[in-house]
Amino acid sequence: MSKLIAVLNVVAWSGFWAFGYIALASGDLESTKMTTAAILAFVGLIVGLLAYFSLVRAAEASGYARRTNQLSAEERNRAHAKNAEALAEVEGR
Image 1 (cartoon, one colour):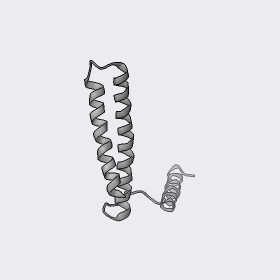
Image 2 (tube, helix red, strand yellow):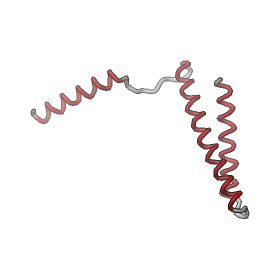
Image 3 (cartoon, one colour):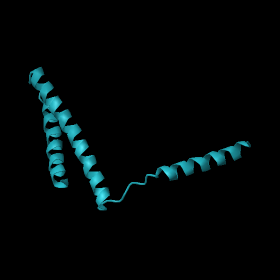
Image 4 (tube, helix red, strand yellow):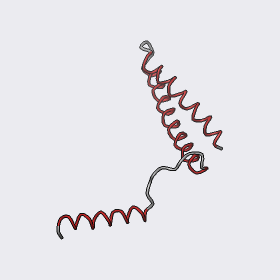
């Protein structure tokens, strides 16, 4: 499944760059063709981003890439409580 998403990622980014270039660089196109190229470039951008994020998530889940340094809910709540205690101590409450 990851290989299929990787192929989709490459195709989407290729479409983004190709149609984006057409939309920006071709001054002699009709407005409908330019709008169509811009819409296709936008679709390529969105699909490319979604596919890329899916690949990153799959790489982290498989252990191929390091996990991000995000805190779990318990660690985050503990850090907030500790920070609140320290702030109250500084303010003299």
